Image 1 (cartoon, helix red, strand yellow):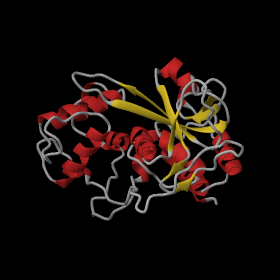
Image 2 (tube, one colour; image 1 turned 90 degrees about the vertical axis):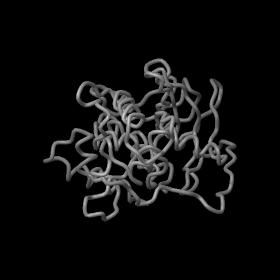
Image 3 (cartoon, helix red, strand yellow; image 1 turned 135 degrees about the vertical axis):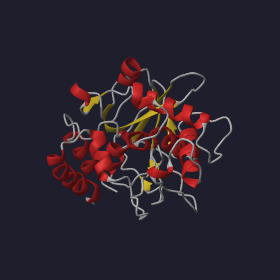
Length: 279
């Protein structure tokens, strides 16, 4: 876990860059120096809040530097009401109108920028849900001088492991445990499947995948209900290489989603690795 100064310095150094497009959780957790937790920003917030690690925010709440601030809105589409979440890292203590957070996709050309939390309500119609003072890996580097109660860690804390799915198993008409994982991820993100996680990739799952694709802004042939790598990333699914060896989401997939030029990818990941492993 990074200390407050290191975390803030890292976050501020990202302003103006484009490396973290659509990876709000990645930006926030890399700033504090922890591995992934939660399949999405919405799930991460709800999980931490339910464990007593989250603080609800109103217009007068003081949001401390060093915390991760969460937002959400409901997007209705043909009977689906998915909750879309977002996460930012707070670099200056204040209220929703005076605190400063660093976020992806708020600057020119979807670059990283520094804004007040209220910005997301005014521009993205996202409500500030709250901030967390702890994650499954420990206490966040909250700025001193604020009386923030941090409950002790439970005896057992579930975090994302190295399990994953094979994209080749996620085919409309198919079935199996990987389809169950896809369905659970869809449901966790608010894309309803009335029959539940049956393990069968049929009409309801196709419709839910289509809704997830549309929620990302995909259209036409890119929103046909057949899941691809970008939507797996959007849902927080770990893709396994086809030889079955478990690992995190392949970097070529993330690089593609970020729009990185192949010639620049190695340099980008070298910087990201260094930032993520600093102590």
